[in-house]
Length: 314
Image (cartoon, rainbow, N blue to C red; front, side, top):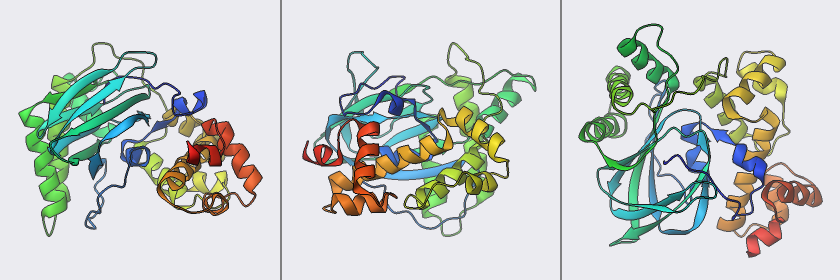
C-alpha cells in the first residue's frame, strides 16, 4: 500500500525481504483466507480478490509487488498503520470508498485495528503491466518511457471507486460476465491511474523480465505443487523458455531465482499451517515437500529465523 519497508520483528531473514510477488499472490501474505468467488472465465491482466479482515495487532509482512495492486474498502472502517524499514508508523483512518494503490519496489510492514465491528471488507484488483504500459503509450506516444505509479494510502477518488465497483459487479455478480466489458473498464482505470498517479521519479524498467501472464502461470503451478520436488525444467516448459532464459527472466521479475521463490512459498504455507492448524510439525513438513523433519526444521530456521516449534510457540 504505502511505499514502505519491513523490519525483522517476525523473525524473517533479510533474504525474505527480497521477495517480489505478483499482486494476486498478496493473499498468501495476509491473515485469514480470501472469500470464495464464483467460477469465471479468466481475463488477461485483470484479477479480483475479496477479503474480510479482523484486527491485526502484530506487524505483518507485505512484499513488494511486480504489478500495480489496488485495494478498495468495501465495508467497515479501520485504522491502518504502515511503516518503512527503520521508520515511524504512519496511520490512516479508512472507511468504505477509500482506496490504496501499491506499486512499491520495497516490502513493508503494516497492522490495522477495525472500528465499530469485528471486521472490514476489501477488494483487491490486480492490473497487469501491459494495461499500464498501453495507457502510457496512448497518452504519451509510442516512445513513452517506463511507467511507475506512486503509492497511495487511504485516499478517496470517486472515479477509482466507480470503476472498481463496476468491475466487481461485472465479474462477480453478472450471470454471464463480458470479458470485453471488463477489460474496457480495466483499460479506463489504467488511463486514469497514469494520468493521476504517476510517481515523480521514474526508475529504469526491469528490461526483459518474465511477462506477467507467464509469471502468474508459473507461480500458480508452484503453489499447486508445494509438496512435489522442485523442477526447473517443468517450470521453464510452462513458460515456453529454455531453463537458462527462464531462470534469468524470472529473477528479473521477482528478485529471486525460481528455486528460492519456491522455497519462500513453501515457508509461507508452513507458517500458515503452524499458526492456523493443529497438524503436527512432521505432517506440515510433508505437506510442503520435506520428508525429513530435520531438513524441514533446518530450512525453516534458515528462512524464518526460528525453528517450526519455536515459531508455533511464540
